[in-house]
Length: 322
Image 1: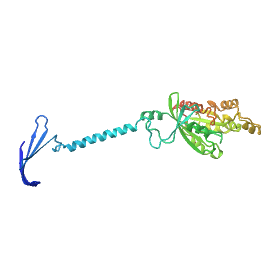
Image 2 (image 1 turned 45 degrees about the horizontal axis):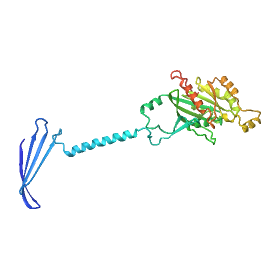
Image 3 (image 1 turned 90 degrees about the vertical axis):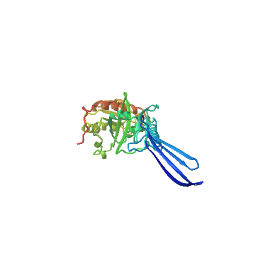
Image 4 (image 1 turned 180 degrees about the vertical axis):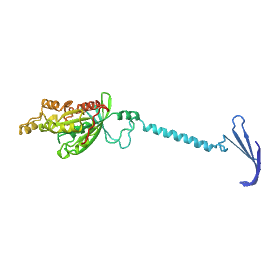
């Protein structure tokens, strides 16, 4: 490659001096690397030589050390981003705003997860799809104050509400595992009062299983199962599995309850009476529970989930509103 020489005159610390600058370019025939050598000679035996090595870019300009450092910095930044991503995917970390509440069966074993917002991001995406593939809807009906809402809250949240508040519409979601299958069970609470007879049917569409409840300390609520609730369920949800549930089992032998019922010549409902009604209405099963003591609560929803899983998509009878 040709050499170029030019002279400059400048003033330094020791006065005026003459400098000769020589630039030489060469190409390595094997690697194709360009080499530029600059030699500066000045009066006073000052000599400085600087060589720059580098591969040329497509535009013909050599890649400088500064550019190479920037490229290395980009790699470090990319590695840090990957590291952050792996940390956020570690098991045990949750997304912001996530609340998960575990319900228990009274013996300390967890059986249900109540989700207020979203699932943990530690849940692998594949597992999320598997759990979301099986979704079932449960609707619970029965007389007002018979124990429906308490049953749902104890199952989903693990706490017993001491104050009674009439329900209009309430929804809960529980992840239930039965027979090795993960099921996302939507729990639809309804109002039992006559004022909501026209509103309640809005809960029925796309249901998979129905719980008809009565209170063991109220024989009248069992009578209403035959006189009102079974006809409503069969009208809107014909063909769906029905489970008859006796709530407030703890009051069957409660002395105060027995005395109050005695005033109207009544007694708490016996298991035999409930079984007889179960057969008359064509329910799949009769189960008893107490939300206050947690007795039988888990069994109710395990049986309900199994019944809901028996309904195939193609054979499912749709609930309808007329």
